[in-house]
Image (cartoon, rainbow, N blue to C red):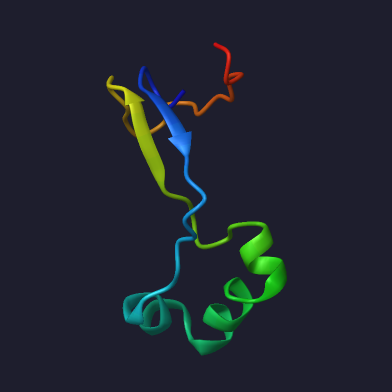
Amino acid sequence: MLGTALVEVTAKPHTGCINFVRRYGVDAQRFVGSDVGRRHRLRGIYVRIITDGTAGVGDLATKVNATG
């Protein structure tokens, strides 16, 4: 759950862009793109909306079982 929306974390990796490099530098890009960085998804995640709802700054993300 993200706010009141039910979302699913996708397997698609979030990869860095030129803006990330400009903001944080090449060393940071290399680290988040390393095996450790990818394993821990340091660049972030993509989610798919299962049931719509609302989410805002400060809302909690909570894990729910696939069965509900």
